[in-house]
Length: 353
Image 1 (spheres, rainbow, N blue to C red):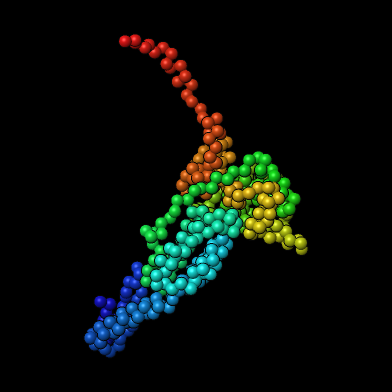
Image 2: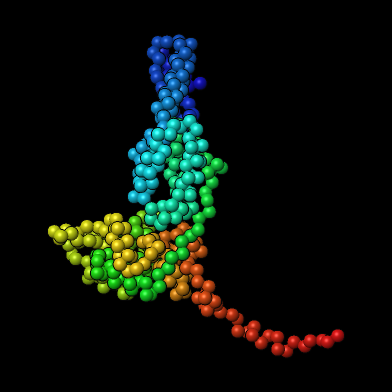
């Protein structure tokens, strides 16, 4: 029991474990008896339980959970913001009682509804992302003691098997893309050229300062990555003139755009501009992240070791099975066999019975 006597004073501390989290309250009783201290202890524990129940009762609908998730979550990507808006519009009014049943029904409809972009049902990755967002929103409110449980369990809502993307750009497609970018959005060309040569994430490069480039080592330093580790990325010889002389001295960014007034900005979100260039180049089903796939495949085909590619791509675990462009003809032509095995059967005598 959390009662400690010090001379004529009792220090009373009530502690409870609520949903795995310790909550506590303490008070000092001066000049009282031990029985009074015990009564105060029980009253404080009852108060903690009542506060927890009150917090839980304040959440009435899934829309409130989603609002808390968006407010408290440190980083929500642009694509997840649009998913949250969609979930709020379609599921926001649903009460928490029986939410899992409603969500299960919603997913059945979502899986079979054509998307605006492709006109086809969403892929498993899109469905999984919706489930992950809803589960994460409930988990956050569970940590804050705002709900009693998370109904979006992994047993009831398992992750569907995802099929990795395998979009590759050949030499002719790359040149068409470069030509379209140079004509319509030339400021994107250095970024796209670098991304197609060195496996990178968009988020790693768009906010880099020019100090990230080291001319002595000819590398770009990424202080933080998705894997939580710093990365040194090489600069190919064909890109070195840009890093040395292509960035204006007054520009603070490694990759940049310039407005009509001459002010420099980081690249930011350029998806709309990239989609326009793809359309002008006659290319479809291409995303900025696919350039990372192209770069990793090319580096592997050139004979670089998996360990080296992992280091510059920022992978903690081997990922080439996902990022390697599947091309059985190229693999068949690249395979080498042991020469000493060619004639090993020449001197074998066969006994005829």
